[in-house]
Length: 338
Image (cartoon, rainbow, N blue to C red; front, side, top):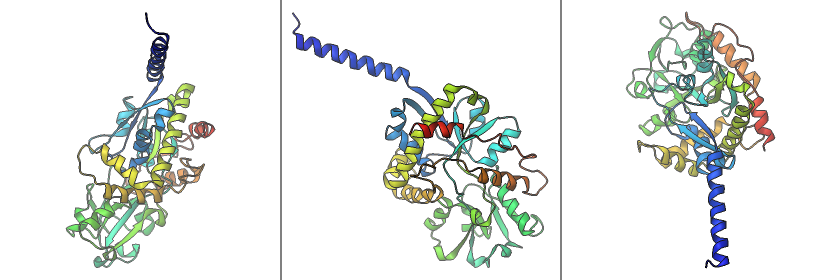
């Protein structure tokens, strides 16, 4: 005969197992596609996953890393992701090409893009770019640069020479260019790690030059927003992601350790990713405030203006999409969950 206490324990264990099974079954699946490989640039999402913030919201989140051969836009267009991290210029260009992307949140409210030059090249101000070779990232990253040159009255091929830059710092290290494209949290520090001293370099942040465009926003397919269940799920995703970002900004070293653990290549170091996280934090001025992730319409429209007036024969976008490529619906829903 089974003792009553043992019977009760059996019932309790069975109930707990059933509850866990139901929670697992009921968890809403979300797939996030990143723009690049695991690094502190995306720390908030990895932290939200590692600290259980997504699980707390009843979400089962898969984070897909990016890479040189991965286009987040193609991934979401093929419905292999619910939400992607992308830059607004690429999202708007893709929208014109037929992929109905809509920005639902903007964690980075400042741009990290810069032009970094060797002082030895004689460059002290942007006026000194004339006659120089400048390294520029393409694939959508070149448009704010061309807008800037257009404002300065410098014509590529005539006043300046454009070097199509890979995602490395070799052109400056090898004196193939006077300036190269860098991010404040990544390539700039690669130059420092390569042996250059800070006082040998001069930076021109796009933000300070008035030609910055929005980076690292969260985008979904517009038609999906017609589904209230999808909006609800994305609201939970934003709430947990913002919690992850707030934590990462406050605890850069812990966030770095979480990111390094996700790097299958083994190339990342805690020291390097901590430094990156500290600089990423400078681009999230709304961290640990109720406004984190809120897309400022003025910044959105400024980006559109930069793209419409970038000069050149092939504009990024041909027409102003108005407010069609942004929404606060999901952000507002997330705010109500706080």
